[in-house]
Image 1 (cartoon, each protein chain N blue to C red):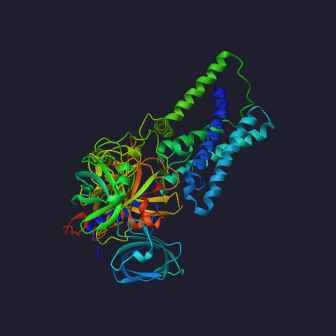
Image 2: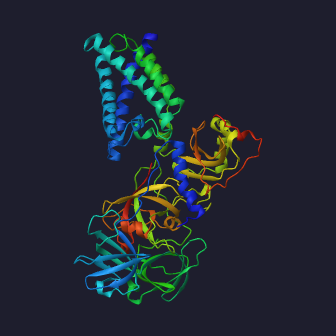
Length: 287
Length: 322
């Protein structure tokens, strides 16, 4: 049974890799620019970005086709193991890259499947990459694949593939985007979202709980929206200095990403405030 | 020049966004090097001098200079005191740009009125432009232009939309050319939206222009037809208009490209493009554009991007600047 599961991974990984590269190429063609900045490549400086995109797509395509070609025993066991190991390395690197991307550019999606992957990186995307890395590792040492011996085995093959695809779909924000593309859902850029709902989501989030001690008011002084992000700015005090604490709330999905940023207050917009003498805000505080 | 509090607050939005999402603060196109807006100070056989505030700009004519004053005229038709907006080719490359230049296209006294007809009597109309707090604008259609305008705007009665370009006179606009074709419906029943599905960027459609308010002659910016109604920038009951555009806010920055000339600029959203939502027209400045108004540019921005004011529009694409 375990052997069958390990065997299933090879065509599955090959499919995902070639689909990923194909989607990226499709995005480049529709945007007519290789600098379309797919996912983690935005972390690279501009002049290296094009090379990074090409390298990424080329390796996905090469590994995908390599997995399929060596599945039947072509090239001997060492080549097959090398390609499978390289695939595991690719997905392992992806986990790290997604973590960095989430920290440095929280508004950028992973770009794994081109235009479908615009939603910001969350733990689901990273878990998916980690699982695929584990799947690739498990394929090392699998003997050459053969056609199924019996209908029972073929059925088991199909069932395992279906179950794994379902699990991956559950971890993939691309499925939601695909529904949008097919017209079954509205993209979040054109969806009307009441501010009250955004405030509820914000108040339930971790960044809000962390920042409430530093806010001077729980009523936002400015609320605005850009596409799928809504921004709310609150006056606050940090280390004896007046600041603007700004939250960014993503407008689609549940357990949405909420980011927070702090900027020195502009005296023209926020009137200066002196907190009372013995208030805890007067002491220098740590976030 | 001290800025009003709302302007400061809107400009600050870009900085706050950069602080929370970690992106670089997107800088807008700072100035319009090829646009000169002001009043004619002197007119000669080969050049004019345009005064804008304290500065004077010397512009020479060339055989290809086009002058518009209600229609195409020779530059000798210009008079001292005429308000003008000029697109020029810089004569010398200089750092501040305020040196001599060659006038490419001069528009004298041009104005535009876009809105709903609320009063009609013969050739005189009262048009509600939808700008909050502003009274309806009087428009008189020039007798010689009436057939041309009626072809594009057959229903010149209250309740229907009007969009005309003409010359500004004291207290009214003398309309000489239609800016578009009239939508076949009275106000309140816009046509169906373009098909659903995802939003493809860049969005294609048309870009139009509007006259500046007092003292904003060289402002670069645009009015956007899809401001978020929930945050108060646009009225609550605003419908979507016929182009699927992402909801943005005042202060957001977009990149507008003139598909006819290839020029592009990064511009801030300065207001609600409510009138743009009511129209679902195409622009035929160069080929036929997809339906829908993406941006209502300030006059200076429109001219800077290479548009001709008397055409009323150019084929445009719009991207949200990241």
